[in-house]
Image (tube, rainbow, N blue to C red; front, top):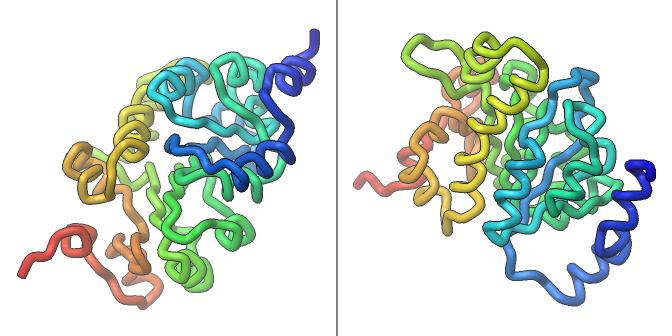
Length: 238
């Protein structure tokens, strides 16, 4: 039996039916999606199938874009067996989900498809972001979290530290997933971002944009745009 057959037939419905069902019968479950990266790196997935299974058991609805398994040591079939549902197009994935995880940066086209106040979680550093990109993000009041901005006292980004501590692609994938999973759980279950930040303070380091503002000072300075500290945005200090 091929992986494609397993994915297509083990899923409760096709992508079109999933879209129609979501419109006609909105689910109360919190939703999270794993988007296929543009990069060709074989270890560019955020969560392992075991991590996805854990989230499904916590009553989260997990959507995965077809081909996601081509970019890490696990297959699409492994994610289907873990309880994820699949959709082929990013547009459907985005509309069905509150939080979207993608290894590399979200493209401008994907930002244009985002729902207002959606949370987008990616790996890559914000050095590539342009004023046009930031404007598109802030128009929709999207929260962007960049894992590369999270680091310890040594200043080394978390992904680099994880990669240095592992010897294989599979080992890196598992270690990265173990790091990302509790952050994802906190974001998915928290009633608001301030609540999530109290439960997982390390998320503060990773927030690039939130609620129409740039929250990463080096990026704001590089682009000559206004900066707002995430702490002041989430809590009234007056």
